[in-house]
Image (cartoon, rainbow, N blue to C red; front, side, top):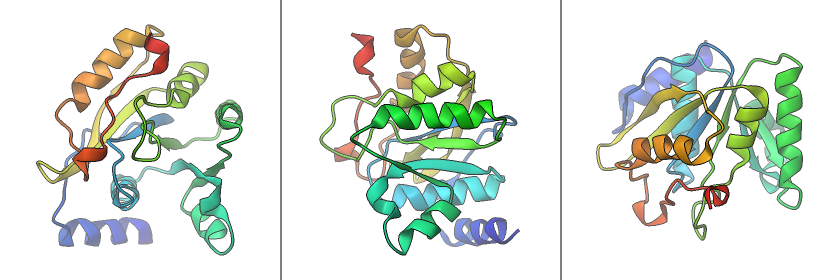
Length: 188
């Protein structure tokens, strides 16, 4: 209740507009892209709290040190060890198989700069768990943020990514110069 109220106040006071297709009604991977600023985190919380989505999100383990650890976990954070990124995929798959219900927010374009490809963990998790992928976005050109369509991945990586690229083609992110084209190394 407090989260929904906080989100309602945020959207009333914000220059940003929330535009969203209906929130997924079952466990889903929620892509947050383009991920170009730390402010994306605030927008993600505001979207999920306003729509009543119980989210989990992946963050570098350094965010969970000291006093921030309990806060980040309370906000749904799951620490990722960048030295062993495959382990987080296995951990999330295990959570889904145990029947935990959550929306997993993933920012596949990584740490906002210096990358040429998206990370494929979201794709592997979705395929291994059967979870659909909901396309969340931030678009500075229209000052909108929200959720786009929810899609089922087919296993045809190139075709699935073509659909994702088409959706994000006109989304700039908060800092457009840090935008990474939605492309996986596995596409060839």
